[in-house]
Image (cartoon, rainbow, N blue to C red; front, side):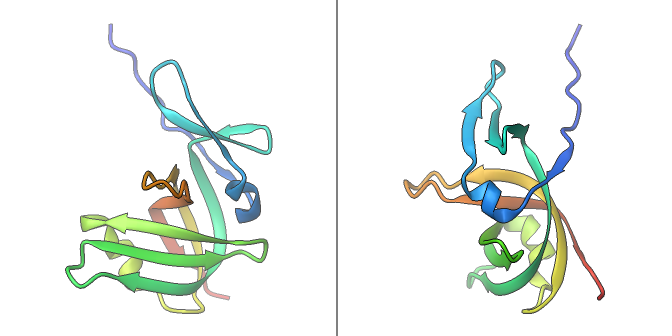
Length: 121
């Protein structure tokens, strides 16, 4: 019988806490992070947009957000950049996404967004 994997809940953290996350791999080979002594795959944050960039071919986008504790990048590729394309500087956004690390050697921690909603204040 096949094992059914449950979708992991998005846990709420400050960005400053996520920047010190410890990456680990479980028995099934899935990457997760230990943040404030809690294991997390997906995160839920509210932050303001302070910078954005989309490359010339529209295959990569990055948005920098700040929640008052620190700054973090949201990164998206190909089809997923549609979520980031309409964000403007100063927007307050709710982000649900997977926490990840850059494999280029810098080991930068970033969020790959799954859901982004602009919050009206």
